[in-house]
Structures are given as C-alpha cells and as structure tokens.
Image (cartoon, rainbow, N blue to C red; front, side, top):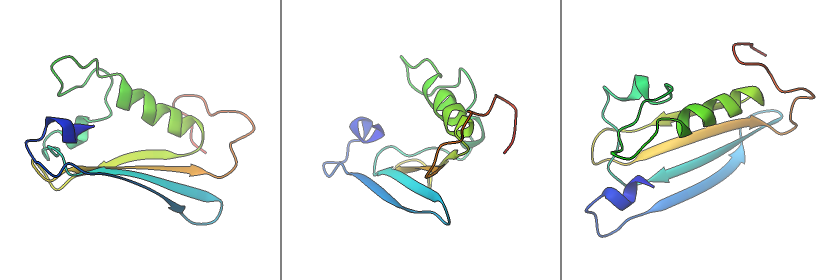
Length: 106
C-alpha cells in the first residue's frame, strides 16, 4: 500500500465492489498515499517496471495479465504525486471456460 510511504497522518485505504454492467463486477482499491506521476502511468503495467527501491516490477504486470486471462481488465488512476491512487479491476461474474492465452482478445 503506497499510503505507508506517505507522510500523511490520516492514511486511508478504501475497498469497494459493485456491479460493472451486465455480467461484470468492479473491484476498486483506493488510497490517499504518494500517488503516481503522469509520466509513470503508461509504464505502470510493463514487465520489470518499478518505482520501489526493492521492487521487482512483476506484481502489476502479472496482475494485469491474470485479469486479461479471465476476460477482465486492471487499470490505474491517479491525480499525481501526493494525491493517492485508485486501482480498478473489472472481471466477468463467471470465469471463461478456458483462460485466454497471452495476446488473445475476447
């Protein structure tokens, strides 16, 4: 959680789940932590990309690929440094009978 790295005394983590259209669910994880610079956003889900000193750059990449293999999406929103971040995972309510292969579309 990026709020840990923030100097804010009022650290916050919000989790939400809601319908996202017919047959889909949206899970949102939002914090008021360090935020994400606009220049970083396009690279966020790339293999090996990290902003953490001890990061591997595997987590978000693997998460986005897992979501895609289930017919879903993983994306991020942030107003910038110091503004926190919001990760949005959308998935079908029912998993596909066979997971999608990397590079394939549903």
